[in-house]
Every structure is written in structure tokens, then in C-alpha cells.
Image (cartoon, rainbow over all chains, first blue to last red; front, side, top):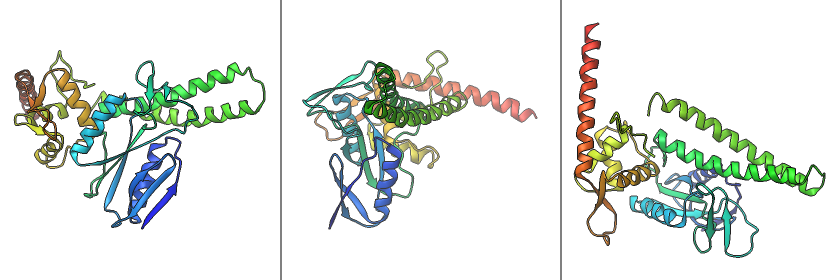
Length: 200
Length: 107
């Protein structure tokens, strides 16, 4: 018996991870993902454990190599989109790629901003990023993703020159929605950077 | 990526252990297993962190790919430069132990 759920997490990785693990506890194992659809199959409750990884800053070649590496370790890896997009065509700029942004191509790494990594539960927590150095660069790439959208919507807000119309509200909503995760990630980074001066 | 201080020669614990694990060729999972076993579960390395560390060490030529490319899982092995780095680290750690023992046992 398969079960389909429609969910959208706005790129919030922790929430998505918690939800997938709670589904696993209830006896559902993820088998397929679509843009908004998660398809599960019945399974032994708690048999699988999930970790969700942010990979939007990687190029297509980097993503392929990383995915292969995780699969070689014995994990099952599914790709997932973080954002819904409205663009037409096959090429799109990703402002949050490394350095000056990257072009996402289809087929390629387009709609593959997130990896859902699944392994059999061995009772220990499932973390992909464990060293302080790696955590710092991992959270930095996530913060930069939110920050680029934050700056872009901030720019649009001024460009719209404070007129009050529908666009203003949309821009304001995006500003608020991205400001919170940007700050949360920044705080986490400060804690890690402080820690890194004393211990690994 | 790795904060390994070239001047002082101090490696991170994870870097040191990955190098130690590769005196015999290993693939990713075996490296993680080695570290967990040798430290009796104290140090657990996530696959994402391992991936980053391996790439940095390949860049620095401390390790290199082992075997042919059509091998199903990629394996790595330490280079002679990597062994040199590890020797220096062992010496540094020994010096620290000596200093610490002298001071802490005085009291």
C-alpha cells in the first residue's frame, strides 16, 4: 500500500527531516519524490532514518560526485527541489551558488537543491555534517541562499519606491520569511565560530 | 576547507584519523567505520564531513585514489607526503604529552 502526501517546506530542511522521520516512526518509508509529492510505502516502523542535506550551492558535476559518494557508503539518496519555480525554459540563475552564482540547467541540478538521504536505523543519530569546520561551511552556504533572496527582495522593495500595492505585500512577505531563517543560521554560525577557536 | 595549520603542523583530529585509516586502501564507509572502531565510538564522522575532508586531502596530495576507475566503490590510499605529514603530527602530539605530563605530575 502506498501513500501519497502533498507537502511544501519552503526549503526548511530541519522541518522536512523531522517530518520524514516521524513518517518512518509511523511505518512509512519514502520511495519517490515529486515537486510537491512525497510517496511512501508501508514498512516496519522506525526501520529507516532520514537526513536532509542542502546542496543548492554545488554545481551539477559536484552534486553528481557527492551523490555517488553517499550511495557508495550505502545510503539511498533522493533529490528534491527546495523552491517552486515559475521560470520558463531550461536555464535559470541560482544567485545562491558559490561565489557569483551559478547557472542551474535542466536536465542537471535544476530542481535538485536538496538531498533526502535514507539509511537503515542503527539507533545512533544520523548526521551528515559532524566536524565544526564542515558545519560552518555547510551553514554558510545555507545562510547565503537565504541572504541572496533577502537582498534581492530588499532591492525590489526600494525599487518599488514604497508604493503600496499587491507587489509591496508580496515583497514584504518574502522579506520577513527570509529574514528569520537568515538570522537563525547566522546565530548558529556565530556559536560555531566561537567554539572553533577553542575546540574542534 | 580544513583548518589544518601548515605552519604549526597541527592537524585536526579527523584529518589525522583519516590519514591513519588510509595506510591500507579504503573506501568511504570503511574510513568512517575505522574511526568509529578505533575511538570506540567517541569520534563519529558524518559522510558529508568526510566527503569534504577527502576532497581537501586529494587537493593537497596527502591521499590519492587507489586502484582502477571501474572499481565500483572509490578507494583511497595515503601518499608518501601524507605519511610525512602524519609523522610530523605524531611527533608534535608526543611533545605535547611530554610537556603536559611534566607539568601535571609536578603538582
